[in-house]
Image (cartoon, rainbow, N blue to C red; front, side, top):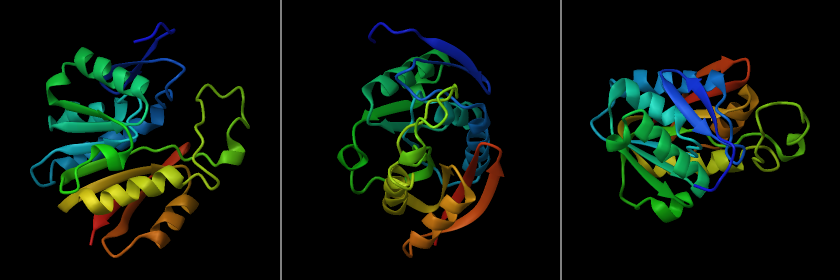
Length: 206
């Protein structure tokens, strides 16, 4: 890993390392790990998939609770390096597979997963940099903040096994509603949980 100033923070039961090239772990998102772990206890046998994994904290906190195998995907090699480091430090490296690149390039057409955790960038382009003193760096999610989210939803439609679950992170309830209106017949929005800094939505296989 290139020389950079590494910061380490607590994230649920884990210590997570990252630097300013990677989105900082946001404390509220441990709720995504907790919900995914709860759902995984009742999901079919099989691997979990984390999309846009960043430093890996959400997926790793999930499998620390349920001990499932996890495939982490991110297009950023630095993020993937931190995911590997954080998994090894937590003693979870044996459960982890990391794939670096676009979803369509690193996932096989016939791969199915028991659960999908998706934490894509969701800040609309016009709002990136609006709050320069915010310690959490915003990443461009496209004109309406949902371009990466739509890519994650397409993966869920193609790669979620029957009886599996998807927990999707976005910024607002309005974004959930917009994504819900765009879903094809394979998925529907189930429960939605709203928090001060973001929103989680469960997507169910129809």
